[in-house]
Image 1: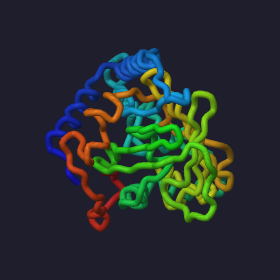
Image 2 (image 1 turned 120 degrees about the vertical axis):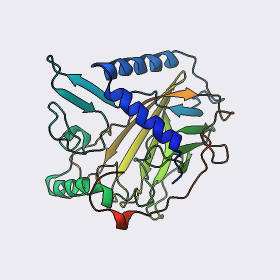
Image 3 (image 1 turned 90 degrees about the vertical axis):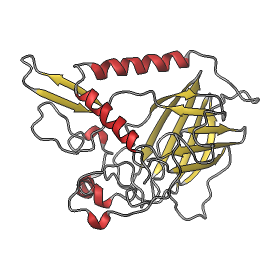
Image 4 (image 1 turned 180 degrees about the vertical axis):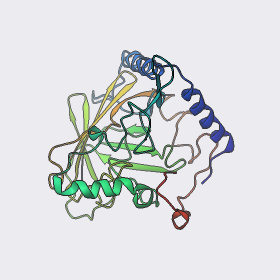
Length: 302
């Protein structure tokens, strides 16, 4: 994996800065993020010739700090509220709501499937199919990084993010049409799209049950059904999704990675993130290679 030493230093420095941040820094950044989204949403909305909103562009989540540091009145007790903690349980930090304990982050599994989910969650570093180079699939890919929108087809392109730097994926989705019933399941499933007013709805079925829904062992079976919704307002793109699996869930579920994105750069121009022959931030693309499974001695995440 090519990951520059300079970038590692930058990430470490950012982490140290947030570790020293005053109480309320995360709330302020969250407020700034919301203000940025409102500002971008107030701009005119570009439209295609058919009158529908043009979803094309490079889309990014406005940055927000991952940590909030809260000190007690006497300054002796430090509580770290990690909004996306790699650890599932944290001991000795009062007030911390660990991911493992936060039921709002989990799909509503039927009782007979809860034990399996917990086992996968606490062995994720060994069991996660994404760590071992299997495609992340839908909906774990999250929202696309770049969209190219035509009247009858839409192209979604993805970067791997922190977990998969340099890795790319794409989806080609017809607008209109019907699902194909004679195909084997595959990670990104079978997607069709249609309009509901100014919202493009993407309906996804036939998703490979070997994929996970997220990093925490949330599994599904062959009956998984995903509905993604994309609504452009100005230069902001609202992304919403609902997930249902009637055989193992008690109700539909909305993951935490839904939300709004803002547009970066000009459409497919010099700032395009994915269409520059696989090069971004001076990093070369690379193939996912599983090298370390046999060397792991515990369940620490990487």
